Length: 249
Length: 249
DNA sequence: AAAAAAATTGCAAGAATTTGCGGATTTATT
DNA sequence: AATAAATCCGCAAATTCTTGCAATTTTTTT
Picture: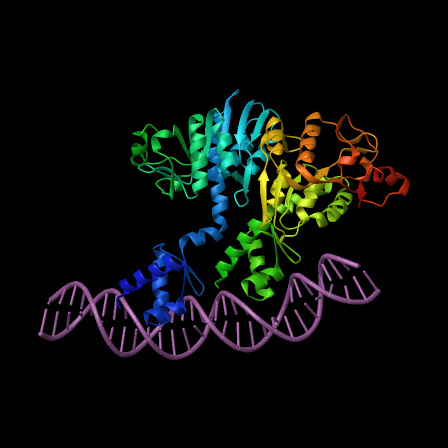
């Protein structure tokens, strides 16, 4: 069996099981463990997998368990929030989705600003409860415990009855062709309603989410007015979006 | 199972339950407690959790447990909650008001119990979001920032549509003649609706609130089924209540 | 086609990591 | 103060990793 075939096999196994064991691969591929290790090492150097003692895991798995992410990511989220806060003005009615970027945004809204904010996220509501001059309306419903947001038909109904000036939306996936996408159907539906209820839509989008496609479409790209990103991007990445009428900040 | 998988599992458990026990993890992961401890130690050194005797807590929890001390009469509230928890049984639909006693109650509901809980209090919802088997329905509305509960017409409407088996109610004032009373008109009105929606009404009443009268009446004494108090009281204090059909625990 | 060079593979030996266990020690609880 | 539980420490066994090297195969060069 050729090296390249082995590599392909390993990647395939990894996709299927999210992890591979050196010993098992040695058996499956009928080569020595040393060879397997050398294969894994090579694939790891090409960032196709994450090598650990005893085998290897997918890259995503690595990210999940490494703290680098949460720290580095927080900076990015804060820098997005910092830009977003300038779009908030006295008298506005605002809808905020339940993303962590919005939690950061909630933290830094200046205390003098007088606005009404609709949200269905517990952490955001808690944050906003410390702001004297913000009127907070919590959108009730069944609680999704992991995300600490309400979901379900009640949320959809409530959101449909709102008329908002601006809407700050966390992003799971953003792509020129497919538009804004979400891995969860219910969330996708709620976001759709939020956008329908708002005059102006702002997407808070970490650059890692750009050109990523999730399972369910929220809205096409042209329904989004402004995308706020954490770092300046090359012109050729932005151009296709801007041709759809999306403004980048 | 690879070390990193264990770590990922621990982090996930922690996210869900805010705490993990070494013994339980050892069982779940099928490794020795020593190994679990070593894992926790490593994760703690990376500031992904906070190690304590017997297990670990989330970083946030570490901070959270400090301001807990500022809550007055915590012991009394906990002793009330301890008694109240025995009234909760599988399959019930429960309404909880927004008192601090109810927060304590929410904390100690056994994890195996399967119930549906309606609440309009952010802290209670946060607490309950860590219980695997409780369905939480949050009642939306305008946020009262100080109490971190929703209020207003939306809450009244929602509560009116609920049919609950039991209702746990924090108490501001309780008097034989005037019944249960509240200093806030809106809260009094909401509590009235809650009681109307419930088959059985439990008042969680610190003894300091007994024979105290607030501005607005919620319901007369006889509408309350059980009052849970923190300390045994003299017969002559209880007797007039019991004559109205109220049971004391 | 032959020779040289490069890459691949398995093996062996020693190093490093991981894990469970017994026993001493510390911590929590009553 | 006593008891039980959890932790820490050192050790040993098992597994995995690294490294150098030799044999083999593949590729390149002449």
